[in-house]
Image (cartoon, helix red, strand yellow):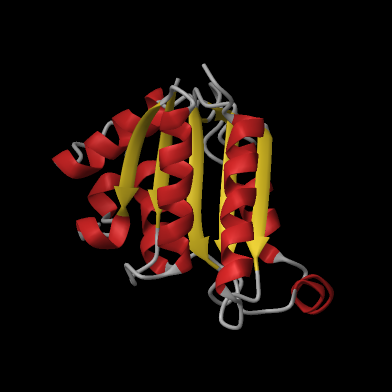
Length: 198
C-alpha cells in the first residue's frame, strides 16, 4: 500500500511537522510506502491559472506529478494547522490544482458541472491531523468545526474517499512536552488502526 502524506505548515519546528514525521515513519514501519510532500519546503505554487481549468489541460510537470501520485495512492494523510477554520492557503491551492476533474472526480455524461460528481480517487481511507490553539468546546460550539465539513463532505466525500478519520490536537501553544509525546502516541495508534501492518 502507498500512502500519500501532505504537510502544510511553514515552520519546520512546528508540532504539525512532528505529527507528519511521526505518521510517515510509522506508516513505513507498518510496511507501507510513503509519498511525502512538505508543501512549504517544496515551494508549492498554490495559484490555479485559468489555463488549468479544462480537464485535458496541459499541466506543469510538478502539478502533473502530484496528480499522478494522489490518483495512485491507496491512502491519504493530511497534516495542517487550523487557520481561521480553514487549511492554510498553500494547502487550499494544492486542493484546487491537484484534486482536479479527471483525477479526483468526474461529472457524469450529460452533466455540465451542476450535479454531484463521481469520486475517482483510488484511496478509500484518509486521516486528517490538525493542530489548533482554540479549545475544542469553543471550536465546536462557537465555530461549528468547519474543518470537519470541509474535509469529510466537501473534499473526501466528493472524491470517493469514504472512510475518513480526523484528530485535532489543541491547545498546542500551551501544551507541555509530555502532552505532545502523548499526542504523538495517539498519531501512531491512529496510523495503526487505519494503516496497520501489511
